[in-house]
Amino acid sequence: MKIVGIPFLLLLLFTSYGCQSKDKSKNQELVQQEHLEAPKKESLTASQLQEYETAYFASGCFWCVEAIFESVKGVKEVYSGYSGGTEKNPTYEQVSYGRTTHAEAVEVYYDPKVVSFTQLVQVFFGSHDPTTLNRQGPDRGPQYRSIAFYKNEDEKKIITNYMAKLKEEMVYDRPIVTEVKKFDTFYMAEEYHQDYERNNPNNSYIRNVSIPRLNRFKANFQSYLKEDTH
Image (cartoon, rainbow, N blue to C red; front, side):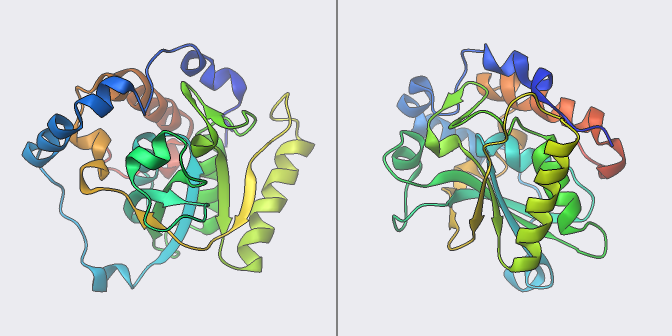
């Protein structure tokens, strides 16, 4: 499998579009209305989701990260939200402007019979630049930091062993700064953030950052993709 390294993300580093752009905040009500008018995918019920395992990751704007994991075989549902901090019930405005210790994160429901936690860790590292501290592409601040969460020691070992392998194979020319953090609480983001990439294809950030990032991931992880991924 080809692992995505620093050259893979150079284009993102020079783009002026940001996940927390002022224009987006000023037009937040319009964004929410656009989401409500967009066709929604069929979601699984809470009881159905209980049949699957969960994994949690943070690697930049959750619009991008959600879309990437949604495209992976065996992944049943992905939610955008906030994790890694201490504040209770954070809002998008608080997190995106760095007013909390949380990062934008995703909650991934997956079928371990189809995709393993190890493979999800590979997707995580292969779809972002884990060497940029408190930054991912055009988005800057600790709210966009790289975090691989673990719920038990087995998951922690999988993450740390894979990081050691990346270092040993010199995949990156700079140190990996990803946090390996014990999972605590995931706060789901506001409804209009869910499936944002799918529901808002004409948004400037989606067109210029999210979709190119998703397409590069798909080009490098073709064997991991669902047949019906968009």
